[in-house]
Image 1: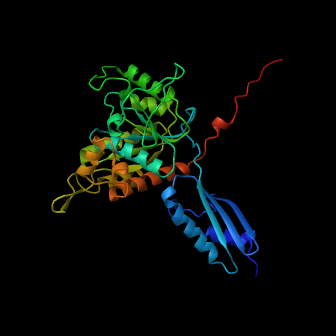
Image 2: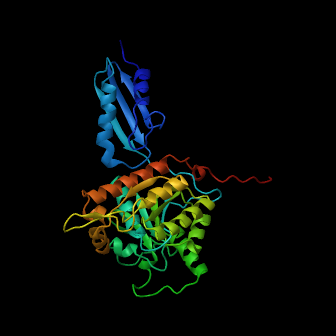
Image 3: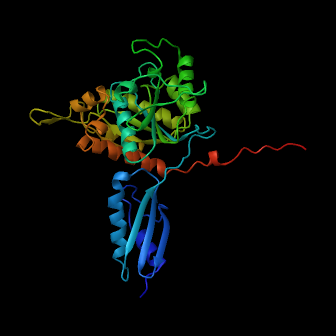
Length: 362
């Protein structure tokens, strides 16, 4: 009995993408399906960056199709295409940027900037075009963490060219001031600086702009949520009760202004002694999971309290670059994929595709 497209499509509808939890047909990942005699060719286009997953997904699809009776040679092509997704109502997309993801926390010292840098690098390693905006005007840390020095150029006298490191674009107030210069600015000046850094930077076809937010729920957070097209927010916390107290406030703030919460990253969840291997929950245990249950948001992942993470970030070579095959880098990559999948499953934003229509009396 000859194999048909319906047979293949039915099999693919039973096949679950392990990254999304949805079948390839419902997830609209099958872009082309051709049956020539007994041979089958399948083109899969994923809506999230997943370069490290392509070989495994190719085998998964090929083995599933090859198991059908009557199938001959099976060819599977895996590709990825990142599109713009919905943001707050009435806020326009930033030119050159498809999706903006805010990395936030309620309080300082929980490893938010380190998490932001490593997630950006993890997304880039999976094949995405990534930018980092350091929105912490008072205490910019991305220049040091990404090992970037120098000043941005302006080719047209109006916009700034982002600096680059490890294949990602970056902009920070730290590129424009001396290291020892304190930012003695009031709120309106800070929010204006943030808007200029975002909108006056010549971002070049960025799939994901990772925004490293300052701690708290003040002027910058409100400006970002009201005037910046944010696709989603990631909350970083430690299991410590005092950190969770502030993290909950940050989560509720984003909910109130209509910015979806992608999930929570629990940082410094456990410490393993580098000398004896003893594991200890220094800041408590399970706090991030309890918070997520209370608010109905997912735990994206847990990271250890590890001196190497701090040393690598301080040296300008974050963990995903310094130890790309290590266990901590793999956790960062897994979190980054979950963030990208959550963004991909949101409604697409077509506002940039339609021209402005004006009606005039003639």
